Length: 86
Image 1 (cartoon, helix red, strand yellow):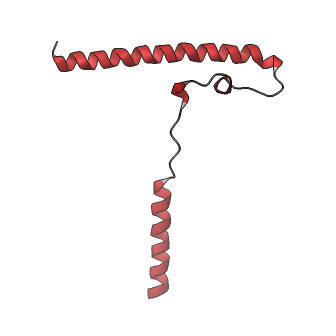
Image 2: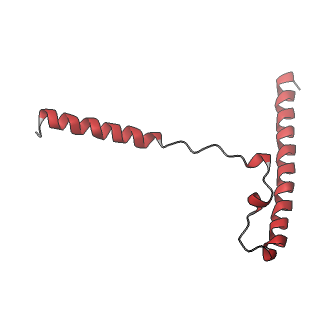
Image 3: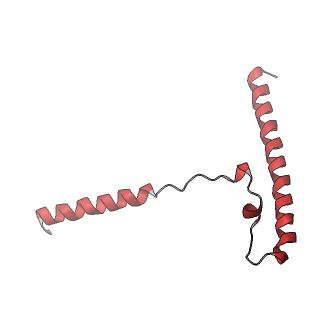
């Protein structure tokens, strides 16, 4: 096994272990949410009950394609105003 193959294998194993640990914690918090739900007035989700570091999600980016389409449509309408309809 080469050094690069070993590094790739080591990274894959570490990722697998990390995902296994996260999965176990996710099961525990889901079970806790199910157990505590009858005693709460409001609905509580497992993420609200026990937030985990892996839950952090990236902020959704604005759709770039929409911006491009809008700007293209705006430029086209300006050109049509300047040159008139054919």
